[in-house]
Structures are given as C-alpha cells and as structure tokens.
Figure 1: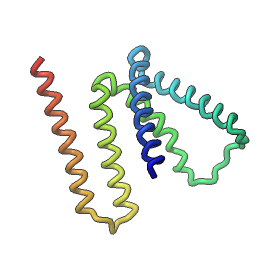
Figure 2 (figure 1 turned 90 degrees about the horizontal axis):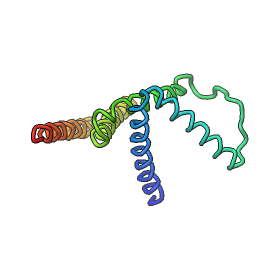
Figure 3 (figure 1 turned 90 degrees about the vertical axis):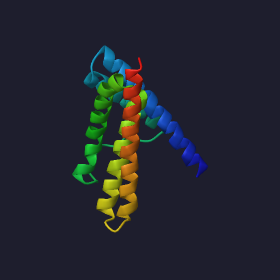
Length: 147
C-alpha cells in the first residue's frame, strides 16, 4: 500500500509541474497550442515506453462503450483550460479549485452510481470543500488589498 501512496504523491507532483509548464507555454502562445504540444509530446513519450517495454502496438478497436473514449477529449480540454487559467490565478489557487471540482464531481458520481451511500456525510464533505475555497478566496483578496 505504501508503494501506491508514494506513486500517487509523485503523480501529484507531476500534475502540478505539468500544469505550470503548460501555463508558461500558454503565456507565450495560447492555451490550445499548449494543449496540442502537451498531447503530441505525451503521445511520443508513451509510444517510446511501449516500444521499450516490448509491447506490440495493436490496431485500435472499440471494445469499450463509445462514451468511454471521450476521456481523451476531456483530458485535452482539461489541459487547455488549465493552461489558460493557471497564469491568471496562480498555481496554488488553480490547483485548489481543480481539486475541489474533482472532489465535488467524485461525490456526485459516487452518489449516482451508489444511490444508497451516505449522502449526509458526502454533503458535509462538499460543504467543507466549498468553505475551504471560500476561505482561500477571502485570503487572496486580503493579500491583494494589503499591497
């Protein structure tokens, strides 16, 4: 279990670095250009890993439901939106808002897929997330006013 925790923490660092680098690229070009290059370089990187591992590149086939392939489009849109937002809000604020959105949508997805789950506890969790975002917004506004 410790290995999975460490891998998850490293993944979080990679996500934050990726967002910062894409945000920087978006400042020089635009968000969609940054997203395009992010995915081109990512495709090349993953292709090299597959070749190094000796895995055979098989033709694409639709074995999963059609809508499950929309994850790629959502990922590209996420990178483009993040590349646009990050330079304007800062890394910490962008990360907090993105994670808050992930937590809230996770609670909603869990509730829809498991309707008998504990909605009361999940509602409190969503309220705490929204409260945290609100406190952060107040803190950021105070910092700007004190300048």
